[in-house]
Image (tube, rainbow, N blue to C red; front, side, top):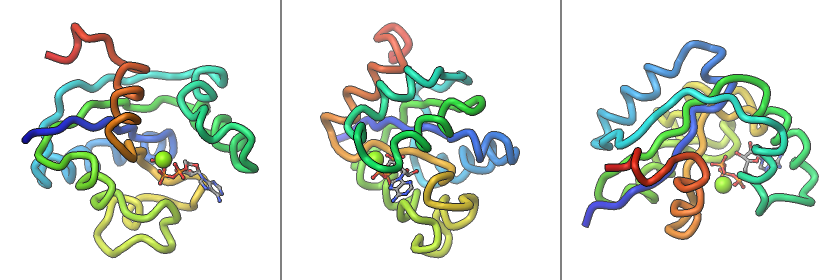
Amino acid sequence: MSERTFSIIKPDAVRKGVTAAILAQIEEAGFKIVAIKRASISRAQAEGFYAVHAGKPFFAGLTEFMSSGPIFPMVLEKENAIADLRKLMGATNPAQAEEGTIRKKYAESIGENAIHGSDGEETATFEIGYFFAGIELK
Ligand code: ATP
Ligand code: MG
């Protein structure tokens, strides 16, 4: 059955001008782009999005980075979308990411790692709702 996941092209990738290259790789892997927009989020909005990480040592850096420039939040659809996007992204730390993955190709560091992908069904539902209204998701 087809499944939806949530993703963000992060500020480092947008600054580098690799948004379209990443989108092409996502489409080539069989994902349908259900919704996408350009957005800039505040520090508080980034803190709300990453609330599960509040209190961790990297939280301040992460939320500062995610609010440092434009991002492209999007909803993707395909069979097994959640797990398959995580595979396509590669490991959180690009130094450990497999060859050919998005993070291996485009990410600089564990803190600035090009792309976000939901890690489970509940997270995907929360994250899609954080950025998109139901009317945008037909
Ligand atoms: P994301 O949630 O962005 O898709 P992820 O699921 O691979 O990434 P998480 O464990 O959810 O990784 O961490 C969220 C983000 O916090 C990571 O993408 C990374 O940028 C940052 N982060 C995680 N661990 C560290 C760390 N040890 N040092 C610096 N930043 C980190
Ligand atoms: Mg995560």
